[in-house]
Length: 72
Image 1 (cartoon, helix red, strand yellow):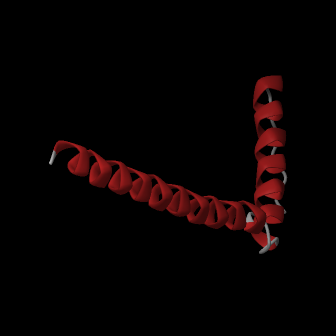
Image 2: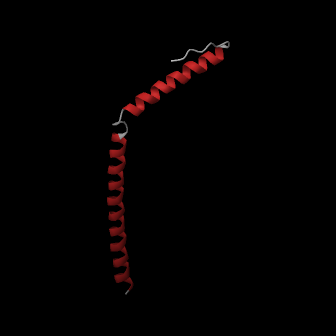
Image 3: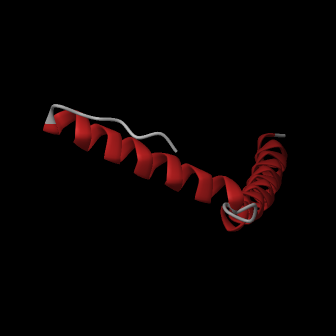
């Protein structure tokens, strides 16, 4: 690792923060299971949404059928 000589305290702080961010990014990339729970929740939510839409569509179809019988 190379060593930098800084003359301003702001630059020193920025270099430390950049190093911390690089370390954190490396940790996140190393964890391949990260986000799997979120993905599972998205898939389950999408499935539940599809079921709810199917139920609503069925209810609308039944109501339209009965409305057609009342009007005939």
